[in-house]
Amino acid sequence: MVHQVQTDQAPAPAGAYSQALVVGGMIYTAGMGPADPATGELVGDDIDTQTTQVLRNLDAVLRAGGSSLDRVVKVTVHLADLADFAGFDRAYRRLMSEPYPVRTTVGSALAGILVEIDCVATVDAVPHVG
Image (cartoon, rainbow, N blue to C red; front, side):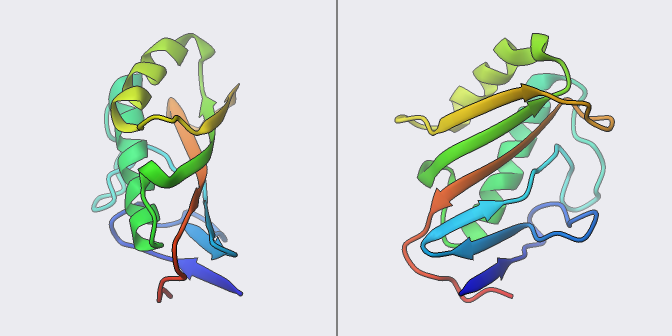
């Protein structure tokens, strides 16, 4: 059974996709950018601020689906400029806990943002979500 996760505490999807899906005890998120959930406006113009906002957005979606950042097992990171890796990693370490999830980081052509992240995390029970 697939359960869709939707929360107004994270940016609304900009296309035909879900914020996250819960399937078989796992939650799979869409890629999140550094937008303010209330306004949709970009937050920050540096990698630290944008990474922090992206992880806050992911945490909101994970919590709506019965999980949280500390339950993440896999992360995929897209950086507009791989030269931002050290700054990204510093911000990431502040919000993620050990043991850190496995992670793939790639350089990507991103539309006006510096970082986009998606993740996979465990859930204890299927939440009652839309």
